[in-house]
Length: 49
View 1: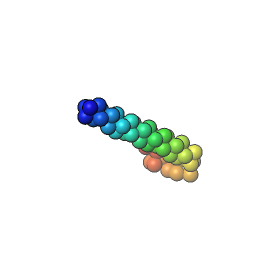
View 2 (view 1 turned 120 degrees about the vertical axis):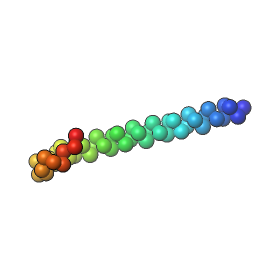
View 3 (view 1 turned 90 degrees about the horizontal axis):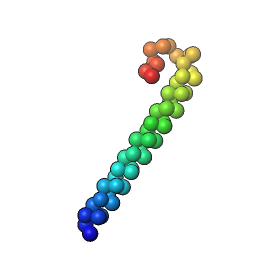
View 4 (view 1 turned 90 degrees about the vertical axis):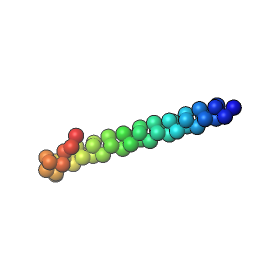
């Protein structure tokens, strides 16, 4: 029984980390898009992507 609980907790942690990684990727993509839009006003040095 405790093995099942342990697996469930592991699965929860995995799901949580996958979700946070996914949301971080989405946020980074949005920031990159915004920076590309505003790139005309910035110098070329700020372009990391």
